[in-house]
Image 1 (cartoon, rainbow, N blue to C red):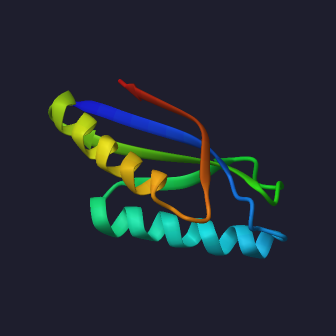
Image 2 (spheres, rainbow, N blue to C red):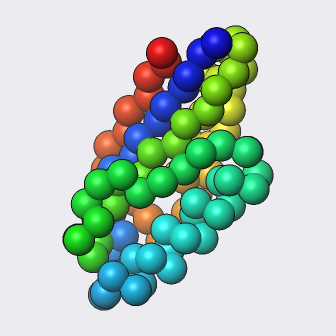
Length: 93
């Protein structure tokens, strides 16, 4: 069994309140959960309006499959118009 985890440090330039941030992150996390069947959560920077740390986890029997899923998830996160990736990290356990 392989556990793949990806974490993104995001800049949300259009957010002027925590409510704006919640709207952007809710849209992103819901889209990832429904499209890829992965676990997604905001894991850091909860009190900052224009910053967010989002993590995604996938469990698979093969590392190749986990890497493929996380690569597809990363492409979706890159395409979010309201967020810019500052840093990302992927690991497999």
